[in-house]
Image (cartoon, rainbow, N blue to C red; front, side, top):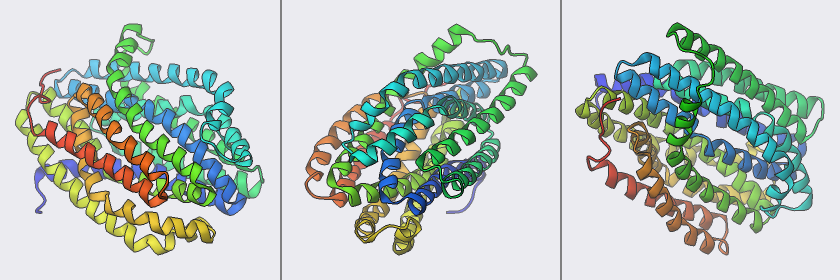
Length: 433
């Protein structure tokens, strides 16, 4: 596949986005490795449960990044730069408000939420400790999402890469110091994450504030704009709720299978997340390019870029799946997995690898439709694909961790069908600011 000017534009956005996206799961894998070596399998399972809850919170609010990217990119394509920055500032205020609300609601409910997973008592205690401390970093996490969306919408994916590398490197260093050096236990891992998230949020605030002042945009809360940002994100919230239902159900099923299965599932999920974020780099380019093209009224450019990015997604999935199979024998050793966990993990890495080409196409088309502002369709599609997944997950409960991952494969195939069907039509190609 020869490199064209269109490919260079995709790569200009996707390569830095790739670095920023994979930084997070790489350092999360480092967290699992640190906890595994320092605290053992019970703590790894607790981290898996608490991490699922936190990931659910963050992913429910991912519209702060995706919605902001789409709106800022479309307004930028239409030449309305001041309105683009105003949209970004509104997103930041919304992120701060949601983050504070999550702390107030989540702190007292932490034991009950962890209890829903059915973890063993010693795992549950550690999961609650990790969850409560990590909730304090929620405003920082959400500000990072909104700030990232602003910069992506402005066609700048390099700055998020720099911030991601810095904050996640700090996270890994602090976790190693707190857990292995100061022996703070699982609480040390949580405090390291909170500190790194807050530092990253501070950097984004500085960048966006400077950009807003350069455009003459007020930094005061605009309640109408904040309300509009929240309303526009509702459909993306529905879509994300469906995604999280799938992953939470999978975690609950894995938890009830036993300790080795839960630990293997937690590690495999981090590997899957690393691969998903790598593939999502092209989807982020899709959000930015599609929003800008449709904002400028260029339907042909949006369609051509979509076709090209789907090809990139497919072949990237093939390559990543092959890399998983090559690295498979060495993965358990990275997490000090015992014999039982190793056996489960080696088995489940097969379906993790084989579904990657499908994932590559799904993530790209998801990003393209988000960039086009086609959130209502994505919400309805999310509902139907989740309904297709749930019976498969319930069936897998009696057949082990590999069957559970095959159920996730059923979900990905259902998403592939709904997204290809939509992208093949013209209803999503809406132009203008």
